[in-house]
Image 1 (cartoon, rainbow, N blue to C red):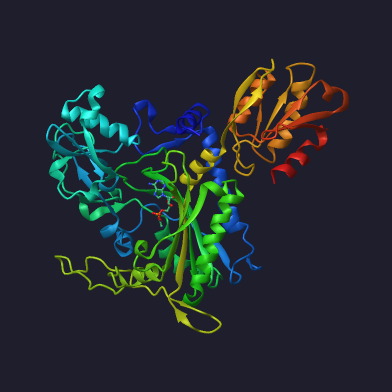
Image 2: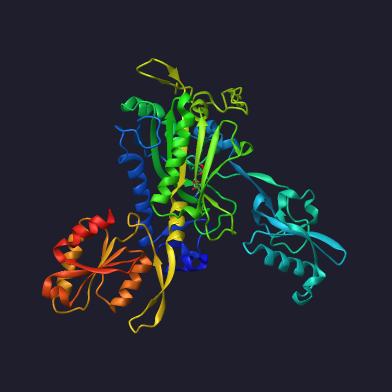
Length: 533
Ligand code: GAP
C-alpha cells in the first residue's frame, strides 16, 4: 500500500486533518476528524475494556502466574516539577541535535544521513533527512559540485548511506538543506519536555512541564491507590491520556507527533515473580493487537539486546509494526513492555538515582535548600498476610494510541476490483477494520426514496442507534452508497427494498465478503449485534 493513498483517504473521508490547517498547519500536531475520532475512541475503549473493566480478577488469566486486580487513574498533564527531576526526565530526557548555521534549521543528530561523494578533487559527506534519501543526496551533490544531472557519473561515491554520528569531522559535511560545507554545529542535547509557566508571576521559579508520559502520574499515586482501594499486590493501574514531546523532527504522518496519546499500565508485583509477569504482559499485549486485526506477518515482538536496556531494566520488548512508510524490512515501535524493577518507586521515595541505582547526594541550591530530591514518602508495600515489606517491582506495557490508530488504518486499507452497476471493473477502496474498532458499525439505506422505504429504513436506523453508531443514507445510487461505506470501513449495510414491502425482510451486505442475505426486519438488530460482538 502506498502511504500517499492512505494519507489522502484520511483527509478526504475525515479521519485525520493537519492541526490549524487554515493557518498553514503546525508541524507535529494532528486533529482527528469525524471518522477518526470514532476510530481512536474505539481503540482506546477496546484497550480500557480488555485491560481494565473487562478483566476478571477472580480467575487466573491464560499465561498469568496468579490472579490480579486492575484499576484506573486519570491524572493531570501538569505535575509538580520535582516529579520530572525524580523521574530523570529533567536531566536525561533529551535527543542530540545539530543546527545549521546557514539555514537556521535544526535536525535530530541520528536522523541526518548521508554518503561520501567525490568530484572535482573534493570529497564531501552529503546529507539529507528526506525519505527518498538516495535521490536527495544525489541532487544535493550535483548542486554543490555544479554538475548537471546528465553528467551525474562525474561524481564517484564511497561507501553506503550512513548516519551523521559516524562522521568525525563535520567541516567536510554538507548539511541537509545547506549550500556550503561545514555549516552544521557540533551535536548538543535538546530536552524534549515542553515548558510552561504556572500562575501569574511568570518567573522561572514557576516553570512547569507538560508531561512527556502518563506513567509518572501512576507512580506518584501508587500509595493513594493502595490506601483508598482494597487492591493487593499483584495489581495494575492503567491510564489513557495526552503526552507531549517537543520532537525535533516530527514525521511519518502521526507516527512521531509532538502531542499524542498514550495507553499505559504500571503493573506492581513482588520482585520474585516479576520475570513471570514480564513475560505474561509481553505476550498478552502482542495478542491484543492480533486479536484486533493486525496481521502476524507485519507485527513483531522484539526483545532488546542487553546493551539496549536501561541500567535498571532486566527486560524490555517492543511490539513493532511494518508501517508502509518505512523501508522494506524495517519496523516502527507501537508499544514497549519494560521490566522497570523498583526504579520508579525508589526514585520518588529517595530522589534521582545514579547509574548504579544509588541515591545521589542531594545538591544544595544558592539558598541552601535541596535543589531536587524525591518526595521522601514511603512508597514501599506491606503484604497484609505475611507482613513482608518490600518495594514492588514494575512491569510497564506502554502503548501509543495514535500509533495504534495509524497501524490499524494502514492494515485496514485495501483495494480490490469489483464490477460497477454496468458490469465494468472498478477499483474499490475498503477499510477492513475489525468490527470492534470500525467508526460506523452499520449503514441503513432505503433502495429508493419512495413507496414507504425511507420510513422502514429510519425505524431500523433508530432502533440500531440505541446499540451502536449507525449511519442513514438515502442519497444517490445504491452502489455509490455502498462504496462510501466501504471507504469508511463500515462492516455492514442494511438495505430496504421492494421485497421488504412484500415480506418484511431486508438485505444485509458484508463489507469484506460482499455476501448479501435477507433477514426479517424485526430480527435485523439481533443479527447485527451477534455479528458485531
Ligand atoms: N512510559 C514509557 C514511555 O513513555 P516510550 O517508548 O517513550 O515509553 C511509549 O513511549 C509509547 O508512546 C511508544 O511506544 C509510542 O507508541 C508512543 N509514543 C512515544 N513518542 C511518541 C510520539 N512522539 N508520537 C506518537 N507516539 C509516541
